[in-house]
Length: 239
Image (cartoon, rainbow, N blue to C red):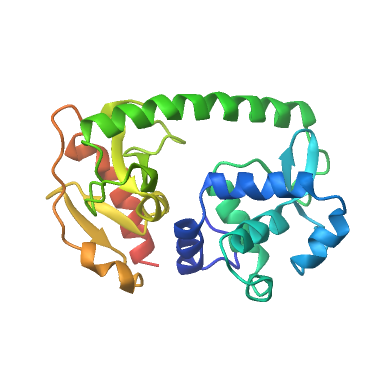
């Protein structure tokens, strides 16, 4: 569920623009800066009062990290300044980064956060194997767009990994980076009845993919595995 001031189309745009590597690049930039106050000032971002990103035992300004990632992608700081906090934090969480909400609890369990970081590192190692297996069975191409440039591709979970989806080839689909982000947040889905791609109408520039058929590999997912993502897509359409 998105925060009150997050609009689905804003979150979809951010997810299409940013990936974990962009956030990690912004975090590295933060640690390398000699003057954190100046670093924040260059982003036209004041110190956070509520949301923090936990990294190496420190509480980083979560909103500023996402803004820095956008600036690193070429967006002007004055444009980034206009973004409301809520969609920026929603995107951080959807990308799998540990965010602390100071208003949600009076005390932060530092041990649990460090444990979360360790689990996250192990998960990323597993994701590397998952990616290679997925690229193999999907023949190195995006299942929706057909793009075959490996650097532009990611392995997505057909059944959400955060719920019960496993990191196996039978739960995999290869997608172009931006399509992966949209798939994860329910803006693009595969109808389990006819295995055709459906695109949320608000994504005007992606309508070329609406109605495309997906050819499922023999050792890949079954049509039924797309059911949860499909339900998420329909729920967003009905809002």
